[in-house]
Image (cartoon, rainbow, N blue to C red; front, side, top):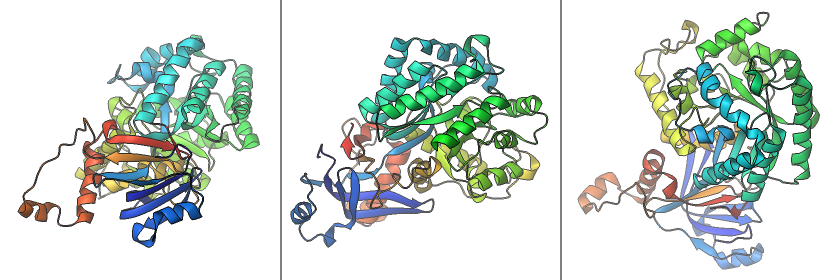
Length: 465
């Protein structure tokens, strides 16, 4: 494929148009000019691909996908703690607050060492790109210089990203706590420094870790900075029962966890809150009114015994939902795995007549259908783009959007998906036509595949894997 950002691809194209509509164009075409999608449709509508390429001034050749390949939008990771990668797989099973004190804060405090930080961040970006993450919303640490090292890693390797210098001035171990003035000033410095990188892909995001780590004054100042620069905001909300109780104790005058953030004016239409497991109906109304999204993190919710987040309930309330790996509470940096976890959790909830086993009684939903693999594709692509307010740029292959994509080969070398020869009689039952066959391939990738099936990755039209 072209390295110029121009592409003309013929083959199977898969992308979500909504939570309930997955479009599969079996013999389709996709045209990209300097990283921007200029055409998509049925390949039969293009009389001569070479003439199309010449007419549109594309600097590329025709790329014909094989019958075991398809192209789909790149994955969007709405919530990932880059500095926690060295701890992945450690301490899982501890409650959230104990896990933070025992494993997370000691590790993150070491990112004052720029050499250490740079090596870790280079690895994180390389690994997530390999796994098909074309866009990531990263939490860094409280350290200004290492936060910028993460931004540089994304710029150099070509990943679309939000970089959040974490803010914490309250109720955190003293060795990892900031002075309020320094927290505010360093945030401004990071914003300005990232702006000077002149990257169209990498932007800053305001990142108060959570209400327990920031006092109201700091959160208010951060909201002012976000408004001044029109920035995204990311944080955590209602992840764990003990955390929810601790927030209520720390902010006794506020009516809820969401109300704390709302008073600080941190809930905006460019805010994404991770988890949301124990949001009350009243909190859902607040988030809906503010246009605030939720990053669903089923892996970490399970690993830290936080609870089962009811995505169908969030969607029914009108919230936008994307997916987050949430390493290292999550034990994988591959969104493909998180898609499966999301389906699993949804299926588990559907086994119950109500979800009051993990939620207060007022949240009971009598019946609900589980998420499908097609729903999971939406959450991992367009849903994530919508949650990060990037849906005008990425998330699917609508004309005018950027070409952030992954090329999938079901039977790539080393693939965990084995190829079996069916008799004609069995094929007629399992794969009666090409459309069913392609749908089967897509489902197999979602439920069985891994990064070995992701043979190429593109960001803004440029191949990065």
